[in-house]
Image (tube, rainbow over all chains, first blue to last red):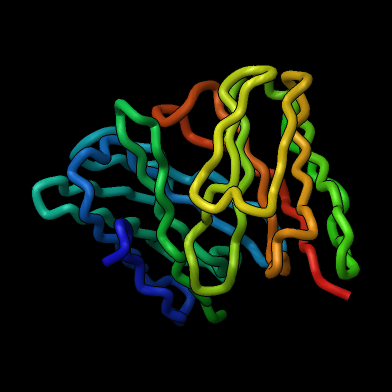
Length: 111
Length: 113
């Protein structure tokens, strides 16, 4: 079993839809959780950064962390064609600093 | 603007050849990282460095080498011992390890001739 599991998709939605992206993990020591957006042939760009459980909102993006279920989510409201990209989840431990990445979910938002 | 610059964007390696990928950052970050990205897999850590003149092996260090002579620079050499080097290589940096989010360059795509 991988430490971080992420459905690779692909996921295709119409413009304006609400998108839900998810990751599960097995290591209870993870305390810091991140979502990155990666366009084709580019490096990942940090979207959201959260600590421990809870929600964080930034514009159309909301990140949720449920440590009891070892489950994190990224919601995108009013999705746009420019949101078409691969979304990577990442998480790290507080003590060791080890970071692990999901394989990424490829999202396409159709006009 | 501060950021991470990777060069070249595309690189081709012949059999038995060592190649070096460049990574420069002007974010004044202490920690720097090299990852390998293959289709369908998460980023895998090759090497990381928390401070100048010190670096540690990651999960897949075999066939790779690094140096950290300056805070801003963290070049990666893919040696001939790396038998499957075709991949997208990403360099990242952060203010510190673990707790701080990592910021990435735009990668180098390495292919075999």
